[in-house]
Image 1 (cartoon, rainbow, N blue to C red):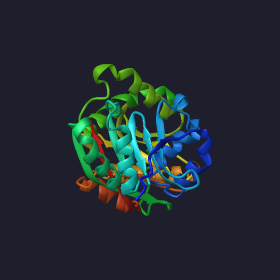
Image 2: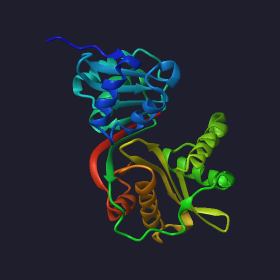
Image 3: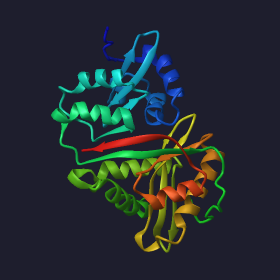
Length: 279
């Protein structure tokens, strides 16, 4: 049996890459957005994109930059991608994507890249293409550019609670503030603000021609249990479908039962399963 080696892709294969990504509109969204903006050349992306399969039939992709993201990766592709990167120093902060591929990569990379800080093996990937069947919160709106300083503490709190470390640690405050500002200026950051405090927030962190992916959902602790997230997600879905993309998607930790119930009540259905390895 012949083994197909993974290889570095370039702009000459952009058409094949985009066709593959079109076949996985939710699982490949993070990679699709970046390629649509800057192509495949590593020097424009500050990342490398590996492919598996013949030049006539590209089967799988693997993005290696700040994150390692497999797309449509079969067991054979996972093995080939792992062989390609295992001997390199780990430079990414996470491995994220389809659960089978992520966990397969991690089983091969752990001896050289470990230990991880956390492994989240079951994260339902959910999507909807219809407005939520629950009322939207009229107080949830796009954050204005002059409100970045209002949003930033909530964004830091969300990240710290979700990931387990502060994004401002080790000199990261400036880059994280820049990312928050970028989302605000792109009209992709939403919040409900009461008396100058963000009580609910979320962003469209990824946008492609197929979907807008919600991330960073957070409700201030003292406001939890009042239904803010349900109305807030409904408001974001309504605006995103009207203004941004034909579907809205997200992924959530399987153990976060309250969040899963919110998304289900807002009309989201599971379309796949993600996993994340955090470093």
